[in-house]
Amino acid sequence: MIRRLLARAFWRFSGWKIVSEPAPTRPTILLGAPHTSNWDFVLMLALAWTLRIDLHWMGKKSLFRGWRGPIMRALGGIPVDRANPGALVREIIDRVRSGEIFSLVITPDGTRSAHTHWKSGFYRIARETGMPVTLGFVDRTTMTSGLGPTLALTGDVRADMDVIRAFYADKAGYTPALRVEPRLREEDAKG
Image (cartoon, helix red, strand yellow):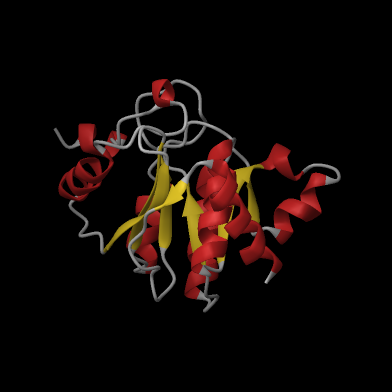
């Protein structure tokens, strides 16, 4: 109840609007993109609380140090050791396969620093667990945030990413200059 009230106040006073397709009815990998600012976190929480999506999210492990740790975990956070991201992907897959039910927010463009490709963990988790992928977005040019379509990935990385790229083509992120084009290294490797 308190979370929904906080979300309602955020949407009313922030200048941002929620524009969304209906929330998924089953656990999903929710992409948070473009991820260009720490404000994306606030927008994601407000969106999830408004749409009553029970979710977990991944964040760098430094966010979970000291007094922030219990707060971040209470908000659904899962710490990521960037030195060993494959272990986290395996842990998430194992949790889903063991019957744990949750939606997971992943920011595939990773950190907000300059780089050229999205991280592929979301793709591997979705394919190995059978979870669909919901395209969440932030767009500073329209001051909107919301959910787009929910997709079942086919395993054809380039074709799946073409659909994802088309959706995000007009989304700029909170800090447009930091936007990364949705592209996985696996696409480039396939020629």
